[in-house]
Each structure stands twice: as C-alpha cells, then as structure tokens.
Image 1 (cartoon, one colour):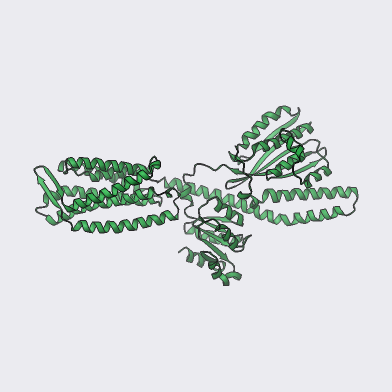
Image 2 (cartoon, rainbow, N blue to C red):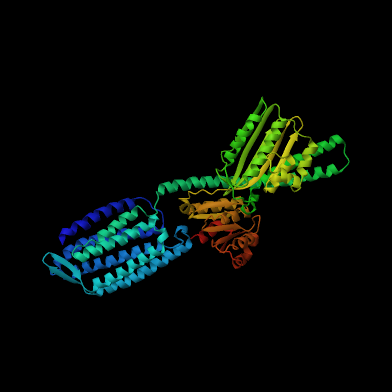
Length: 596
C-alpha cells in the first residue's frame, strides 16, 4: 500500500505551490473565489489525512482509536470536498450567473447554509458508523457501513452534476464547466481503478488535479490591472460628468437673458421703424436665435434623451461617410478655394441612423458652397457630445462665398413646414435646396440654423442625435460597478461632502444634477448599490422614483436627501417607497448611520 504514497505526497507539493501563488496575490471578491478557497484548503487537509491513512492501517492494532479517527476523517473529507464542489456546480450552472446580481448572491448564501447543515449531519452519522480494515498480504484497504454510505452519497452528488451538465448542454463550451466535466471523468476513472485494486488511494489526487485545473478557469483577473482600470475609469467618468454638469448649468443660466433679447427684438420689429433700424433689429433677433439654438439644441445635454432618438437600423461610420463625400467633392471645388475637413477625434466608430439622408444633406450643403464660393475656403467640421450610448452630432459647413441676404436668413429661421410632394420627389436626387435641407433635418429629429452675410459667407449648422453601437468588450465592467453609488443633486456642497465620506468608505461615487440623467443611467442598465436623490432636483424625488418603479426589474434602493424645511415629513417619504432618507443638516452622522 505504501508504494502509492508518492501520489498524495506529489499532489501535496503541487497544491501547496498553487496555494502560495493563489493566496499571495490579492483576489476579487467573487462567488468562484469564495468556493475555490475552501476547495484548496480542504484538499490540503485531505492530502495530509491520506498520507496519515497509510500509517494508520499499519498501526491500528497498537494505536486503534487514533488510527480509526484518521481513517474516518479521511472518509468525511471526501464527502465534504464533494459537497463544496457541488456548490460550485449549482452556482455556475444557474441561469442568471453571468449577471452576478443581488439575487445570485442571495442564492449563494442559501446554498452555503444548506450545504453546511447537510454536510454536518452526514459527517456526524459517518463518524458513528463502524469502519473495518482488511489485510491480506500486500493488499490493505478499509470497508464497512461508513464506506457504503459514502459511496451512496457520492453517487447522488455526481448524478446531480451529470443532470446539471445535461440541462446546460448548450453552455458546456464555457470555461467554467471544464472543471465539472473533468471532475466527473476523473472520479469515473478512480472508481474503475479502485474497483480493480481497492488499496490504491488516489481520490484526493484526483481532487488535486481538478483544483489545479480550476486555478486557470476561475474568474480571477489581475487585481492590480482592475485597480488601474478602475482609477482610469473613475477619472474618465468624473471628467464626463463634470463636463455634462457644466453644460447643463451654463445652458440654464444663459437661457433667460437670450429669451429676453428675442422677445424684446421681436416686439421692436412689430413697431414702425426705419428700414435701417429694422435691419439692425433683424440682425439682433437672428443673433439671439443663433444663441438660443446653441444653448437649447447643442449645449443642453439634458435634452439628449435615449427615448427621443429616432433609431433607424442602419449602422454607419461618420468618418467613412465624410471621407466618401470628400473624394466626390474635392475635384469640383474651384481653383484657389481651400477645401478642408475637420473631424473630432471623439466621434464614435459606429453609429445608428439614416446615413443616406445625412449624406444627402452634406452633399447638398457642399454643392451650394462650391457653387457660390470662387475664392477663400469651404470647411466641413464635425464635433460630438457623447452621453452614455447616445451621441449628439454637431456638423457645420462654412464658406467664404456670396452669402445670402438677412431677410432670406430670417425666412429660413422661421420656416416650419413639412416636406411637400415636389420636395419628396427631389429627395431621390442627391442635390436639394436649403429649404428642403432644413425640413430633412427636422424629419430626422434634428435641428438646423444658418448664419450668413452677403459677400462674406455662410455658416450652416445641423444637430442630430444618434445612438452609438455599444462596445462589445465589457470584460471588467462587473467588477468596476459593484460598489457604485449614484448621488443626484444640484447642491454642490452636499455632493462634495457625500462624495468625500463615501469614497473614504470604499465606494465608487457617480454624480448627476438633473433627473433625465438618472433615468437614462438606469434605462441603460448601469448598476448601483444605492441611488441618493435630492428632493429638490429639477424634478421632485418622488416623481423620479415613480418613473423608475415603472420598470418591474428595478430593485435598487433609493434614498431621498432632504432639506431642513422637509425634514419634518421624512417618514412620509418612506411610505412613498423610498428605502431611507438622508438629512442635509447632519450629513456626517447620516452617512455613518446609513452605511454602517
């Protein structure tokens, strides 16, 4: 029997080396790692017990009680290791395992609890069952009721694994199923070998082989890499959030004075004025309109709403589209005219939208510029404002050509009509007039403005919202979102205080200052542990919560943040469905209370 001691000794050396590598490096807190840790520890204990078993059978006549305890402990080890591995099988074969949501962690806690209870009961029974030692020359092995019960238990457990594999047959190619399949094969081989010679103890060596294999299949990326990615991601997110928040605040501050200028200039135009004054008033009115266009349709990223984007199932690359147009048009530009194109480096690679209509708009605008520009320049520029999986295209065509009169510009700016039958027919061609271009942009859900002076040139700007093709490589996303908390408030002092306190507690804090942004994040399935909503956002917190709860899958706890004037009705917010409240008057105490 001692001839086969080399198996557990070599296995022990290998598993100790793997343990050093595994436990030395920091690890992510995942279900697989939690199970793997106990598989490794129990396997080391099992190998030590197996080595001791070789001595125990020889010394049983002299040291009967210690020898029997060692032999029975080895039998109990085989059961416990199998039950720990059983938890792994049930977890990775669960349907929503890839989502790694809260429900999965609840299921894992229940699985651990019931496994512990069952393993404890069966282990106690095994210790009370008799075990016998058979010796006949060089052949030595144990038998009796204890081994019979173990065989029945292992048969039931392995049968469950096989059933799980059959149910999840389509997913067996995934690497997390490799240890399960290998374990079934290894245990079958061990059964065959021990059926031939029961004195060969190699069950624990089989367990070691499976544990070492799992080291290369469990979900355990380099924690240092994740930390670096997390830091970079936080910086990028914070920069984007700061930019979005600045645009939102700036646009709101500019809207009111622009509206006053537009109103006053429009009223002045209705009065009888000299021709010269009337022209100046039209210029003022058009300039105010251009500023209003800039603020309302470009800078106001709160209007960039996923639900409002007209999606056409046509993937296209704006960069490739513009390059195609450049090749078509640069040969038609008059000599001495500088034709240039400027594209933002932030333009997404793939967008969803009507590329045919967009191409028609750009070609028509360039045709117009080429026709009326004999010297100077023609420039096509494209910039973007990106918000999650949405993109606001801001495209301008500028030239130094003949320009158009102020009255014509005014007519275009107030034009608000649908496409006529003749214009719909002309859409079949690539060249349409400026009136039709404005109507096409409106048809696409976009915005149009024009600025021009006679003999100085024209600038046409169009704004169109498009969806972005989502990135396919989301390898680290689950790890980076697990500790995220969304804080939505326009009270910058409170946000700074909350962010500082939560970051100290190890949370990743994301901020927002308007309601639509919160709704977009949830609609795009961003994961948060909690959402903290200021009751004095641009919408009341209850309205936002009501909208969120229209989605039956929304389960994130929402905490309302209250000013002094609403603290006295804090209990009413709990009745309305909020998980808790946060009082601004004592943020330090409240944060400690909530996140103890």
